Structure formats: structure tokens, C-alpha cells
Length: 189
Ligand code: SF4
Image 1 (cartoon, rainbow, N blue to C red):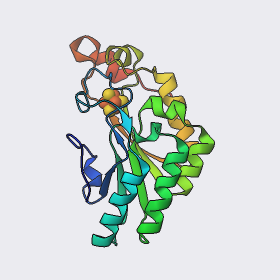
Image 2 (cartoon, protein in one colour):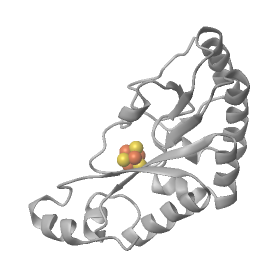
Image 3 (cartoon, rainbow, N blue to C red):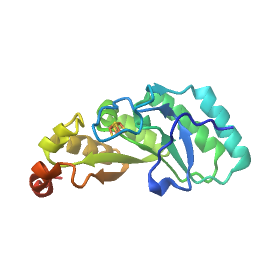
Image 4 (cartoon, helix red, strand yellow):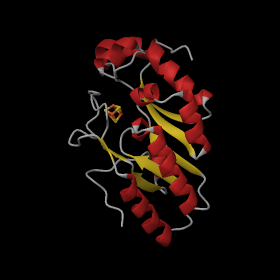
């Protein structure tokens, strides 16, 4: 069976997806507004545990078309681990159309464009990225760990690798003090 550890989060558009916890928690876990994984210590799960869960799911729901890899930034796991996981998913689910995950800017810094391209080729073709703001002062206040220019660079890297991005912006993240600057600062995509 599939054992989920702690509270599980997924994007609304993954409501009908099989969810696998490839990693537990978030390797960054410092954004001030995010309490999703505070209680979890980050780790990558063992591949054999995940393979057992995939087989269990494939026996019961062989028609799975979408898989979401939880938790907070599964993309930070080693590329060889992710490739092996994607191979297992492709073998187990013949109708699999897409695999997705959350991607922190830090995990996008770690993965090379070539790695992302290989992973996309094996099915990991959509990342959910929290951009939050295009304003450096807001990003600093949120402790996002990157400025707007770096956010743009890593997002472009993913898109150049052929990966689709679904992005989140936090309205009002600058509070009253930074709200005007936050709203007016248009990132130079
Ligand atoms: S990178 Fe994402 S999951 Fe991790 S703390 Fe920040 S918002 Fe939360």
C-alpha cells in the first residue's frame, strides 16, 4: 500500500493524480509564509519503497494518467534517482501522460538543463514554481533565497529544457509597506 508521511500537499490541478512522496519535506524550508513542511526533516525516500508503492497502485489503478511527486521540492533529489523512478512509473502505467512536482528555485539551481531535459523526456514535464513576487525587496522579506533576476534565470532554464511551468504569485506579499512597489514592479521576462 501507499503510506503517506505527515500532511500531504498537492496543487489543485493534481486532484485526480496518483501522488507519490518521492521526498519528504522541503530541502529549503525557510520561506517565511510557508508552514507546509515545518514539522518534517527533509529526506529522499528509498527507491525500493517507492517501487513497491507503484506496483501496489498499478495493480489497483492501472489506468493512471497523471502522477504528482510530493513533497515540497522533489526535483532536488539526484537525477539518477528521479530517472529510475520515472522508468518505474512508465513501465507500471501504460497510459501515463504526465508527471509533475513542485520545484523550488533552489532545486532549479541544482539541476542542469541537460538533466531536466532527460527527466522531461522520461515524463517529468511540469513543475509548479512559487515565484511569489518580481520585487527583490519582497523576495528578501519572504526569505525566498533568490532575487527576481535569479528566479527568471532558473525559470528560463527549465523552459529551455522543454518543461512546462505552472507558477504562483502571492498577492499582497509585500504588506502595506511594499504593496505599491510589489504590484508595479514588472519582472523582465
Ligand atoms: S521552497 Fe516552497 S515548499 Fe519550500 S519553504 Fe519555500 S514555499 Fe515552502
